[in-house]
Image (tube, rainbow, N blue to C red; front, side, top):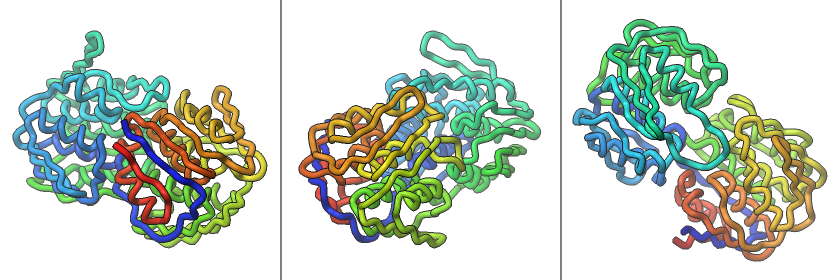
Length: 417
C-alpha cells in the first residue's frame, strides 16, 4: 500500500522536465517482438506498467532490462506465444501483445487484460481488426487464442478511433502480405510515436496522426534506437497542480500541441500560458473561474485521462463548470473522494457539475484509479492542512517519482511505501 502525505497551500514554482510517456512506451515495447531485433529505448519512465511489460518479454524468451530511463531489448530469442493471466492482469495495455505475437509467431494466447476499473473496455475492435487480417480467434473461458497461418493485407474501418485497436492492427499488418489500410484510426501522438519506431524497424508505414494509416509490410532491421516522447498527461497534471496552487511553473521538453486542449481550458480559467515548441510556462494567481462546458473526446479532442486532474484544478474556481465524459462510463470515481475535501461536485451518468468553493480542507482519501488518484494529489496540494491518500499502487503505474518531481517545485509531499 502506498500512502501519499500532502500538506497543501504551498505555491508550486520552478521548472522541471516531464517524464517519458507511459502510453507511448508500452506499445513500442510490445512492438519490439514483431521481428528479431535489438532495441534501445531512451526516456522510458520507470513505472510498474513498464516493468510488467518487460517481464512479459522475458517470459516469452526475450532479453529485456531497464537501466534508469534506458531500456534494452533483444527479441531474437523469442520462444513462446502465450502470456499467463498473472502477467496479463497487471495492466490494460498488455492486450497490445496480441497483434505483435500474431505477427511474429502466427499465434497468440492471452487472457483478458487488467488495469484500472473504468467500466466496460471491450476489445471487440481489436479482435475484429485482426480477423480482417486473416486471424482466427477462439475464446475459451477467460483465454483468447488468435491464430493465422498467413496474414493478408486488407482495408480495415474502425467504427470508433480506438487507440489499442489501431496499435494492434498496425503491428499485425507489418507482417501481412500486401497493403493494409486502417481507416478511422486513432490520431493520438502515441500512435505517431509507434509509427516512428516501426519505421526504424524497417516497416513501410505512413499516415499516423491523420486518421488513415497505411502499412505495406516490413524489411527487418537488426537494431533500432528510439527516444520516447514526453508524457502529455503527466504534463497536464503538473500544469493543473500549478494552476490550482497559484503557481509559476515551466514544463521543459514538452510539445504543447499534444495537450493544447488542457492548456486552453486552464487559460480560460484565468491562467497565463506561455508556450514554445519545446516548453510551456503556466502562471496562476490561484483565483480561477469556471470554464463552462468541457467534453472529452478522442484526440485531438479533450483527453479523458486529463478530465479528473482538470476537475481537481477547478474545485476552487469561482462559478460553474460542467464536464461530459464520452469515453469511459465509470470515470467519475474520484468525485466522492474530492467531496470529502469540501468540494461541491455532483456526478450523474456522463455529466459532472462543479461549483467552486472558497476552501478545501485536507482529510484522508482512497485512490480509486490512476488518474483519479492524480486528481486527489492536485486537490490535496490546493487544500488547507494535511491530505493523506491511501493507494493500492494506482498512481505509481503512471507517474514516475511524482512526489520528488512535485517537491522540486516546492510542494510539501512525500510517498510512504
